[in-house]
Image 1 (cartoon, rainbow, N blue to C red):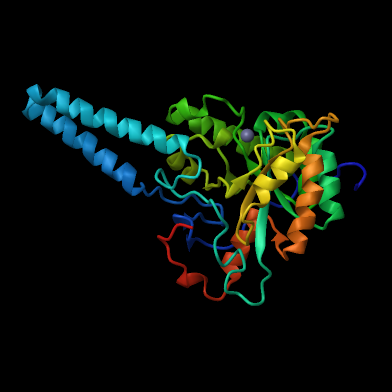
Image 2: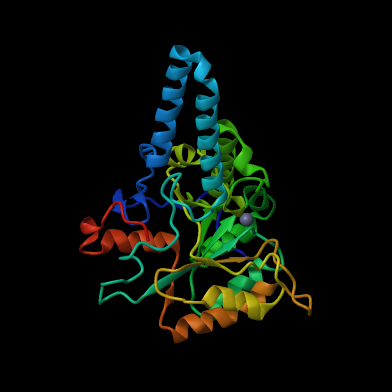
Length: 323
Ligand SMILES: [Zn+2]
């Protein structure tokens, strides 16, 4: 371990680099220069807006058709709700479920194949520090999706994450179970408060957001664009908040493992093994050894963006393809 947690509060130079690129994960990769990007409604959102306008017009002209127009609107809301309950869905807007192909090393001989290890729900005293030790021992980099109010309580751990060259990302301020039921202002507040406390504690401006439990609603993407954040879900998760079996969690994470995968583990809310240890502490060393054996480099999500920007044929990325 690196001893005490260094890093002056709020004094680090904020990172800002690069420009926007067309992203491969269902939309544009958001700008890296800190300026807000424009919200572009997904096809489903556009269709919903048209349907609502049409239903309003039909109701004015043919009020007695109301059972049909109401049914159409309710069906649309059901579809939107189901899309939000499906964490890996691209229907509500851009959503990284894999690393962009160039960032993953696909087709670029000079880049090793890469994956992203993402760790949610911290900072968690006694756990996050040990996770950092494991990552350090394996020379691996990870992205920590931190809960804002936990960063407020444990700013030194948040600084330790950044000091060890890992990435800190936004996992909302309170990690509400009802996050997907919030209105536009509630969603925006959860994002901006977490963004503010992360910057205050570490000097870093988070570039990525993951919704609590991956559950969303149509108000999320407009709020993310204003905050210049890219939504990230995962390729595979270990269900390590409910399963204390290191073998089962490891098996879930490594099934069909390949370059470009985004893997999800938890330092906060971690299930305990039979021995009482947070399961991540048993799984992570095994996972990092498996990645090394498979010649997959664990990189941060920010590094994936930088790789995409640096790749010679970045401009040729297909903007609409979804991995
Ligand atoms: Zn979470």
